[in-house]
Length: 247
Ligand SMILES: C[S@@+](CC[C@H](N)C(=O)[O-])C[C@H]1O[C@@H](n2cnc3c(N)ncnc32)[C@H](O)[C@@H]1O
Image 1 (cartoon, rainbow, N blue to C red):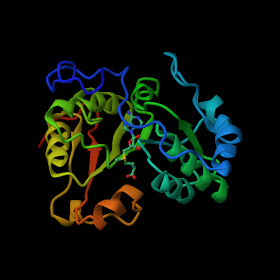
Image 2: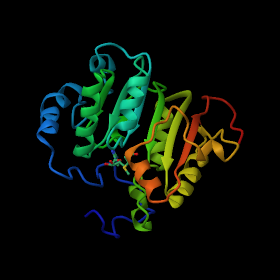
Image 3: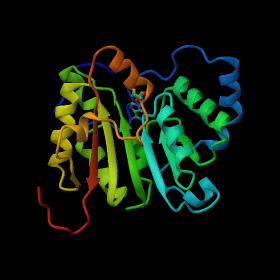
């Protein structure tokens, strides 16, 4: 049962079968229900995903030259901005909260954006179905911090997720993670830096305290700032395969 400490101890490996969080909050507005019924089926990956590698050429109508992914896009403001700013990039993004998916669909329709495909489900199984070294950038922005110790295994940043990301990210690719939670920040840095696959090129405080210009604010970030919390913007790089690890 979700939330049962006996099942949820931090030392147990995470079960990919379980998702945590809400799938639906407020009822969808009629305009959002229309997008869900008409636009989502055209942009959606199959749910469940199955076990075969994704046929990206079929998904996008041509083999993508450049592929970026986002896990847990929330209301999709960041994703919609990136997709409009980078029409030459193909995006696959996952979110299981239907109100957020409906919000993204609204952005995409208003913008006329065509380079986004959506997994309306847990994003973690997607990672195993993408080609090795096939992804140029991955975003995990303000993932749920799950502050209670017994819930830490629900955190999306786990060694298993990082290994899966390391497989699909190309050499030199960026992994961007943001958080406003000091405990999760420490966790993210500890786990990413423990991985031999990632480097953190930041040198000065502004490298993590200032939001880069090509990184628009998300709804969650704006809420955090209004509440007086300080977001951190972490940009990691996938180390080159076969290169010696220097820290
Ligand atoms: C705190 S919100 C942040 C949303 C957005 N990135 C932002 O900054 O506004 C975290 C989001 O991640 C989603 N999420 C959590 N785990 C996920 C998973 N395994 N796959 C897809 N989405 C996930 C949740 O539904 C939620 O919308």
